[in-house]
Image 1 (cartoon, rainbow, N blue to C red):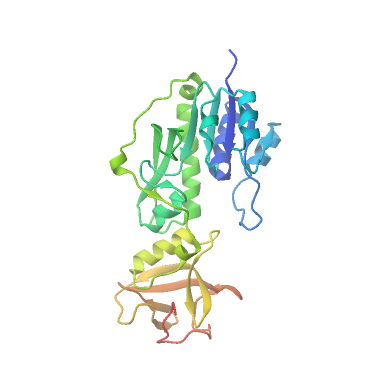
Image 2 (cartoon, rainbow, N blue to C red):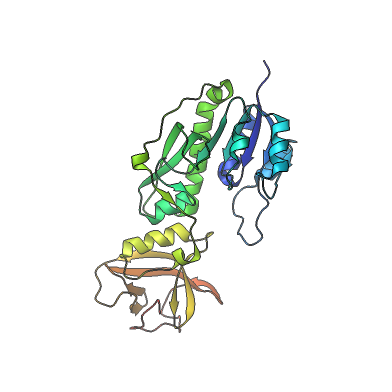
Length: 306
């Protein structure tokens, strides 16, 4: 029996894991559409393009997959099935209607929660104790299609975004392998999303990375975990200099103005609720280092964020 022709849109670790699962299951992957790496982004994840090339699968990285030329090209290819894993751009509705078996996406949250951009970072930032992945039918609106399957992923108290990305990539592969026969047979189940439970977030912006010292120590730690390396980092200012905070831990009650430096060794800062010990920080122009009393730029009583 001839296997259906699958057109894969993929990037990042989730894309790599799911593409690898398709390859190992000997599926017919007619092509992979991915992204060119952004020279301004730290590329810490596995390369989908290299994996595809290793198995002689055609790889394309168009500037816009929704241009008239690309929509026509995909229509001419006539894929039986479209699968998308961590592909960063919306796919035109005209393209979604091409495959006879449908078009499906793997989203990095337990839909309908955390639709939109950066769902894993957002979940950590918001102090969630779990997130997950959802395989869903693709429709015109992002992450709004009927659910095929989901897998929950725990978020540990000290998990970073990179660690949760890794967990979600493994969970995505598990879901894909569990539903692959149904996808290729055209019998994927459908469960309508509960719109009353839906939440959606935009892409994290540079201003979202700024620490609000009036927030609780726990909330600030969540921001740090969500943005620590290899992401841009949570930051504050000290005398006009930008300080990136890569790791911190909440401490007990504190008497002081939010943002006030309470001690230098350890480096303790007052927050809106409790104090924060800064374990690892970096002055943007100098480089990373442990936070300690040896850092001459800070003084007890100084208020950060000004």
